[in-house]
Length: 365
Image: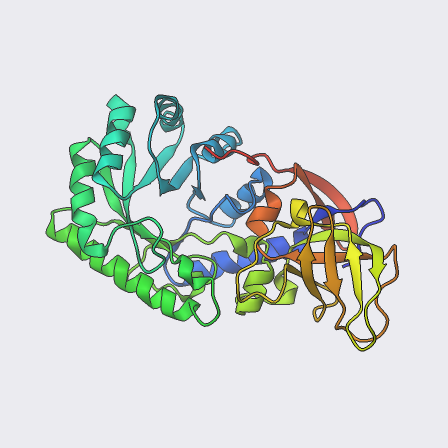
């Protein structure tokens, strides 16, 4: 894809044809497994993309915060799962009660204290909110061990909440060689937790899993739905993990070569582009080969980031691009990049066709 003439740099570009293909492919693949798809809106934060996901058959959206749900609800989305434990302040409780009046809401819980606070804050609306007990399937962030699911479920029920099932986030799938193992652990944890609920008299109607690296590995024998997010865009992490191909990358950052850096004879040439951590994000897992990749020069490496500049080491053969050349960078972690801009440029066949506002940007609570 060429960079449209009307684009100044740095700017985020979304190739709408690739985006639509990614959305349709995931929807078909998940449906073929007999699973529901509940994509994570925190990746894109853009109502136009949510509408495309729902039109392709998504059962609703996963979100990270009440604020994200509010933004999407204002644009017509009416079914949400807030996939993190909430500690309801009075202000959050009032906002959540307003959401319950217009949308189907489910919330993650992983402690008796959190469940009690959720029920107290919702008051008379508690019975309108379903909860999923979060299970730790190996990521070791939030969540309880599968055998402890019933304890949290009882607390939620005692608080007047509806216990709908269990969920997990196999975040440890974001590492080389880990997606298959993480998917197996996810399945075992969901199955074990659902059995623990059943023994306690609760039916786990919803068993939710599936990050982008594991979504297509998740099987319906234990799960009922998956919640991938990054799949809509792809990013350099997914590329290096082998969970997407170059042709699946829908989001890139347009940037310009602004300086050449002299290097000793026999060492790779280096140059500077005008996209730094304030648009690419600074995430770099220990196994990643750089701070992003150049989509049209995949052997080049981004070796350092400043706030507004990146250093590129040239391994692509031939002469490095001259000053003034526009390039496209694949961010390492697309969820961070999208939250750094107010809008994205929508392109199709090399032409600028629209601009979409990142409407849920900064809605962190």
